[in-house]
Length: 398
Ligand SMILES: [Fe+2]
Image (cartoon, rainbow, N blue to C red; front, side, top):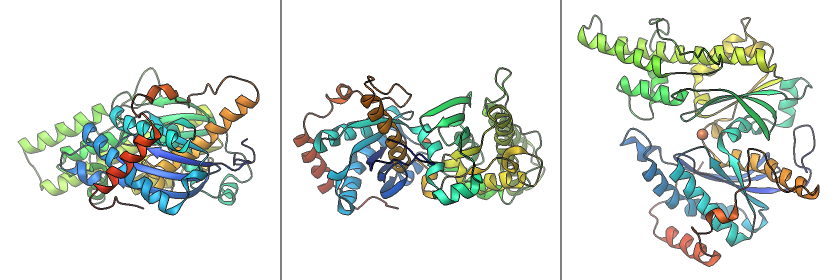
């Protein structure tokens, strides 16, 4: 059962998390939804640099190769027979990458004789903020108040979402992007400016040299139907036009022009996000804001939000903010295992109460869904060691 001020599980539970939704392969062991026991991650960033973006089939292949290696590393640290359940990220993401994780989870489930639960990857991103602070830190931040309702802000290369959070298992989307995700817009902008992959990181470095107010015409898009909806296709086209104009009739040094453009482009995107967070705060009236996703690593964004603390904005003046720790910003299995604990506890509670099964968004995976992929525990074990022995070098761990 989940009880206590910070929803820590009263009954001990060790969850094995599996994350393969995009280009990070990750396994983690988490106790009681909050304490990280072990975490292993293999990044494919260097692999996708050559193509300037993630190629799904290549990502899937590397997930299949990395998962058994990471499992071996995890087994060296901890006894996997003590795992109570397996949580796997089952949506949203690249279908073929997710399938690699699901197949592996199913194999492990059969091999270890443990149940599987599916976890929504985006909701786990929001939950990662809650995992990044100790209970004492959270109590101090929230000054004795509870965290709910909370406003979830997930900004990454694949997602841009605002959510009303009533509990770890009750997250309602109130705003999302109509086209590109924020990280995608930053990456594509960086590509237009001739920067290498991953673009967002290089754009941030270039923007530090430029004037963020040099091009005030750059602005994020708006929707008439929902003031909380994002749109970044227009600003991206605007950036391309400004670059084209400069190419046709250069009137100044190209380097400083691009630095100003990068700074203005990044500022416009972040100001759009902050403006919509302000609107969401008025709507949700949250006790806390939970940030999640890879874009939260951007120091300029964090500084912009911190600066709001000194202004009349509600973003930080009245609402405490929980940021994910650096290792939980990008895709990781810690957040999957953490939220998986809550989902599995809910499933147990419903069974005890005699109700059929957990009907929330974090649906249980149907065991039959994957039985055709992996035939037997023997097959899984054999394949696991075959992959390991063929490996060259160990995956990157952190
Ligand atoms: Fe993600």
